Structure formats: structure tokens, C-alpha cells
Image (cartoon, one colour):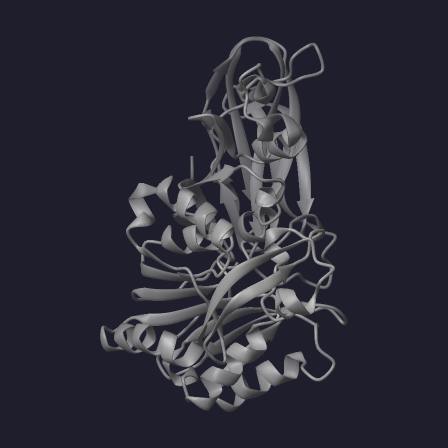
Length: 415
């Protein structure tokens, strides 16, 4: 149960969560008074830190415990310091022994000195005697007719299951469900974006008012589904030039009929001009690393394959979408992850003065060129009135958020 006296109960991807309030100390989570027979169990608590760490970050700011008899018997206690809690969803597994049948309670106490996101803990899982736990019994067991992806990626899929995702087999395909979204696991690289998009929530944002999102570089559609699952996102426009990943995204959208109607797919990439032709594919790379700026297939005879693509000039392509959204009173969010094409896209948008139609950008940029750097992207945004939140490492590819600040408008950085 969530204690509204200590914070605000909210719903995050259909997971009941409390946002604790500074200055309010006590048990933010308690219950559920679950009846258990005697045995060994564990409970998973999911917590994230949403306030700055103090100087003495090694001190305790929260306590997890397992109790019975209305708190009279404390079976296990785990102290959490600021340093132990990540800004992203962090699992804390607490083991305990129920010595006799009874009603058990799983609690989180907060000191009131940190803002925490803590999910309601619904149940305990039994630790089985053969080295497995009860979660293993909920994972689909491989059989002769099992999809190859379940066998080939069993370890990765079991890791997702232990993080609270549901893994099952539907119509001879492996389907993973996280919160409000489901997606297919068919290829080796389908799971590579899960950590970035789902676990780390790099694309999550919050704001008042309805929103139009543009997703440039959709890949298999995980970010687009995350966007569409937000109640105030009314439409998502996706751009993906490679046919096979476009089709995989379409299949994932079809798995989510409740939100699929918000998504508008375009089988083109964006650049600074219109172009159609074949591009070389790196046989050693995954589909998320494909680029349309490395040159045509005729320029790379050593490539193992090529793919036809259609590119469209970014400014005239996005203008009707963004202008129409603004005329309808929508906020506009643009996510860009397109393996080097971000420089050509920014060049097109800047030349057409298009940035004033955009409220926030989330950009992964790529260190692929000697004469093009991150500053070429952030510089034009600063001149257009954006504030940059840079998460780029000292070298290699990077990531930044850009938000346009205006009087009376407040944006929250993702996460």
C-alpha cells in the first residue's frame, strides 16, 4: 500500500508508485499483509532517487524491512544510502525466512530527506530448494516448438523477467511486456535497445498539455511505443528508412492496439535534401547502427549487402507536422537518433528557421566526422533559445537534451 500522507501516489507504466515528499518521514510503503506458509522467500523493491545527493551521501535515507504481527516481529532490515539508489529504476532484493505461517508486510521507510520514487510491493516469491526461485516457474519453458529466439536469447530474456518484465510466447513469437508496452523478440539485436529505452528511461519526459512527438530513427519502435503510452502524447510521427526495421516496428505497433492509433509511420529517412538509392550495410553491425551517410553501395564494394532507402529533406517534410501541431495548441518534442544524419537534419532545419516550431529535442549524436562536432548541433540550438542538458562523455558518441524555456512554461528533463 502507498501512504498518501508521505507523498503523491502516481502510476508509472501501470506500476503504482509513490513520490515521497521532502520533510515527510515514515513508512511510505506498507502492507500487503500477505498470507504465507513457512519457507524461504524474497521480495523485490524498486526505488529511484529523484533529488540531489547531499555531501554525506553514504548516510541512510531509507530502510526496507520485512515484518509480521503488525510490525512486532522484524525479520529483515536493509538500510539504503543515497549512494545505493540510482536515478533510474533500481531493484533491491530482500531475502527472508518465514518461520511459521502468518501475514507478512513489506515496508519502505523514508527519512524525509530525499525524494524517492518507490513502487508498491505486491507479493513475495518463494525460493525453491533446487537453486531456482518462483520467478523461474513463470518463465516459458523451451519445447520442441519453441521459437528460436527464446532458446538463443534465454539468458537475456530471463534477466528481463527478473527485472519485472513479462516474457511469453504468442503465435510462435516471443513477446516481452514492460508496463504498458509489448514488443517482439525476433532478431539478435531486438534486445539491445531495451536497456537504454526501457530500463534507463532516457526518452521519458513530463509536461503539462498535449504533445506531438517526432521520432527520427525509429528502429524497431521501442521509443515510439514509450512516447505513445504517455496519456498526454496524442500523436507520434516515426521516420525509419530501412524496410526491415520499419516492418519490425510496424509489427510491434500492432501488438499495442490501445496506443497504435496514435502512431503515424513514414518509410523514409531525413536529411538536408531528397535522395533515393542503395546504401552499403555493415555486415558486422546491428540494425540500430545502420547509417545512410556512409555512402552508396557502389562506393563500398567490400560490403556484404546493400539496402534501398528514400531520404527526404527534413525541413519541408517536418514543417506541415510541426506547424499543424502548434496551430492545434500541442507542444512539440523531437527525438533524433539516426547514426550521423543528425548533422544534415540540423542543417536543413536551421536554414528554414524551423527550430522555433520545436519545444524540446532529445538527440544522440555521432562522432563520425572530422569537421562536424557536437557544437555544430548545440550552437544553433542555443541561438534559437534552447537550454542544453548535455550527457555526452569526454570522447565518442554522445547524447543531449535541449529545452526551449518560455515564461510560464516548465519542462521536466527525462527521468
